[in-house]
Length: 306
Image 1: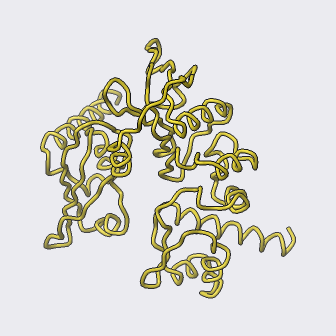
Image 2: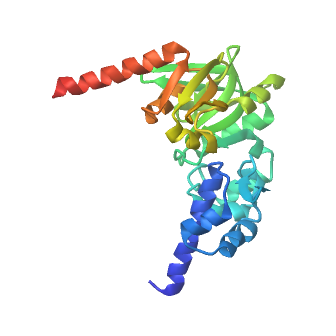
């Protein structure tokens, strides 16, 4: 490996890591980045102020973070370059210049929302993805067959499509169906057809999608309160680890109370499991009971196999 190649690889690695941190919503301290990558402060400042000049970065108290925006704010050239660095090239079914021009030269960028930096590969689903985008932009009803589970297929008709949402790497269609706002997994949809009929967008849906931090749509949400041990409290203070997270107050000894609202228990249980034994559910009590029962059943399986 030549010295120039080594320098280029180091640069690509550093930029990809910084971009990933920004994509994850982190607030970056230039000096901390310089220490992490073993470069001087001026190098990091050049990365943020020059190489990422086209990104909608916000600088507050010396720290940099990415504005809450989607890929449509970047140019075609920027997207193509950053795709190879951030691993986003598989996010859309075909990240080509022709595809990007179709996005940036129309209103299609308003048809989707990306949350998170991981993704499922939609290659081969180009026609489906494009048909959904166009129906959203044109406000046309659609019909499709939805394969919810093996052997459970249902023809959906007169569905109003609103947004394509990428949540934790999975693409969903947010749509009004049978009097409710629902989320359909795109890969489970087949035979999508746009009808000739158009619908008038419901004003409240955009607001609901904007406020929602998940894909549990059209469901009444429930307040949850967690007690987070002081030894891990800093992680929860630094960034939102739970959807709709709010820091309620800090207790003596460093523990904190964190609240959220969820539509389903599993939205929070999977996260609490990850942080065991440092996080407990205070409200509602039945959520902690469900968690305890699940852990007991898991431990029983281990005892049975020994």
